[in-house]
Image 1 (spheres, protein in one colour):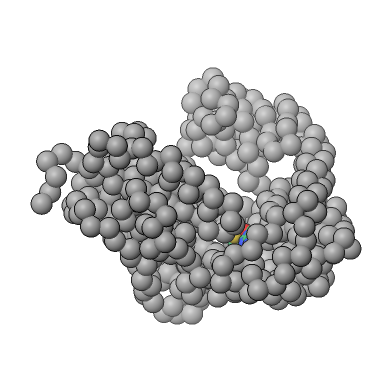
Image 2 (cartoon, rainbow, N blue to C red):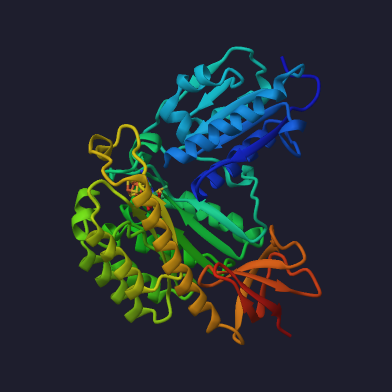
Amino acid sequence: MKPPRPIRFFIRTFGCQMNESDSERASGLLLGAGGVPANGPEDADLVIVNTCAVREKSEEKLFSYLGRLAHLKKGKHVRIAVVGCVAQLRGWEILEKCPAVDYVFGPDNAAEIASLVERDSALKSVSTSWSEEWRETPPALIRRDSPASGFVTVMEGCDNFCAYCVVPYTRGREKYRPLPSVLDEVRDLARKGYREVQLLGQNVNSYRDPESGKPFAELLREVAAVDGPQWIRFLTSHPKNFRPEIAEAMAGIRKVCRELHLPLQSGSSAVLKKMKRDYTREDYLDIISRLRRLMPGIRLSTDIIVGFPGETDRDFEETLDILRTVRFGSLYSFRYSPRPLTAAAKLNDSVPREVKQRRLAEVQRLQKEIQLEDHRRLVGETMKVLCLGRGRKTPDLFSGRNEGNQVVNFRSAEDPTGRFVEVRITGFGPYSLVGEKAG
Ligand code: SAM
Ligand code: SF4
């Protein structure tokens, strides 16, 4: 039986852009089924928590959040659903550990969340089945958070089984979205005035259209041929699948932003081998040289894991050395965290916590220095920025990203949200630039 008033739902998202994009889809499906968004968990009949399982810390954060949500149930009829990667990994364990949780849905069961608007079942349930097929969400149903930059998922899952990573177990094997439906979604964004498209997947470079077999470089060309969006980005790339044709396609398509997130993980070939990354330090540096030859000025970012089992001081020094050589525009750095089911979980987690912490601090100190130096050089330059709204931490300033994907906070007399603006850089911090709208 349908409840007498619309169900108010609230979604809290942990984790990466894939999760943000999944939450946008879930939100659209809930709206389509007659739900209405709530302002916060206190105001909701249905709280959905979209989870990340990549590190132990991500799981700890989730369980502490769920603990804080439990009070919502006192004297009120509120239902709580846990969805995404931890849901897939832990299943029934979540219901045992957190009695306040009612439902658990894996990343491939997101479409079922919409049924919660119609079905007010008191029965607890766990749904973590996989489908081999691509499950389409009609673009019109996606409720996007950004007014100017739209996520478009092109593939799901991962076949790489890097030794440290739980993603292949939480998101399953790779499956690719049919190219015509990718293009439909890009056209939908174009009609709605979106200026930027971000193609998403755990390993986008291995994309193949299931029908025609067209590879990722061709996908880039066809997406770029859609009139409207002026910037195209994609995430995440894997060095072992980053074939020369992809760099050439990027260089040949002006709409593809001159930036690339290319996770390195470690600068030591010995550690990369243990991580089962399938490339060496030299392979990685070759890709960087090719990219810079084809697109001078391209801004690169990366992911680094410190303290992988067996990582020596010398291995770590090789990581610092690559950071000094490549001078990434930004990086995400993590302490190695053993994850269930992974190959590395069977190894001795040999690097002591203090050593991991010291190495992490060292990576971050060096990177901060590099970013400050690079940002200082940008003062006085005028650059094109896509305004995404007011800054979250700086509400008196507008905030956007430049082509290199750097955050630029700026002053403007009028609200340019959703548009490209020219910004003159007047200041900087280690992680963002500050400026004024020019003209
Ligand atoms: N598919 C992407 C890739 O290959 O980079 C994203 C994977 S994961 C969501 C994002 C980052 O988390 C990885 O690049 C890696 O640096 C980090 N990561 C994954 N598993 C980890 C672990 N067990 N401990 C520490 N960091 C980890
Ligand atoms: Fe994890 Fe490696 Fe797949 Fe990235 S490529 S999701 S790090 S297994």
